[in-house]
Image 1: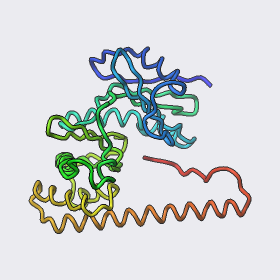
Image 2: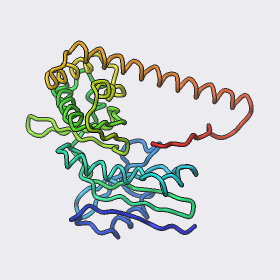
Image 3: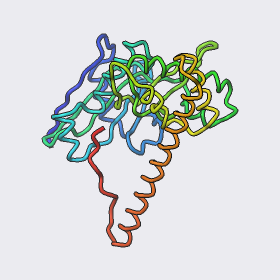
Image 4: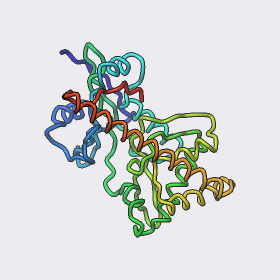
Length: 272
């Protein structure tokens, strides 16, 4: 089936489109894998002495192929545009370089988001999961300051899991870089409920939640006790929802197995 490509490069980009296209042609055979690649595949390649990160989004189902082609921006395009907006607000994220989309007759076939690879960083997940991580409290405080600044600008990050914040040490300071940016809301202002709800996916570690609430209270002049209670309640609700969803999928698999139906579970339209 014939494909056509659309793309956008950051102004002043020193790389050529042909270099990116060449990497995409050999994307599945080469490159260094980042993460497990179970849903979207992230790899980095060395181009002219610099590591460049390529994120290949999972091919959408038929419904979303049409949606992303004609009615909604692709995840790659949203990642690129959201990254540029964060940088314009003074918020750190790996430098966005380009996005590419491949469309066939049915709609969007595949898409790629391309940015600078950060080499000397760790996931916030590593910090949260290790109670003895060096300077853990200072890192969590830096993370909280980043999110407070983002909230003050009316930005709500919908995929705020601990793997989507990267930590870089610079001297005696810590810098936070946000990644996986395709799901964000932009508003004139965020309510307190929205702000505290933004931490629901992060952790159920009481010490981490206490540090976040304390730092946010200092920055916002809002009572610590209220913030801490909200963060705990939101994390608890999210954990229960996740457990119910997991249980529901398990029941569906059991029904499928009893009925002798082969294949994976039905895929619902993903409008994210």
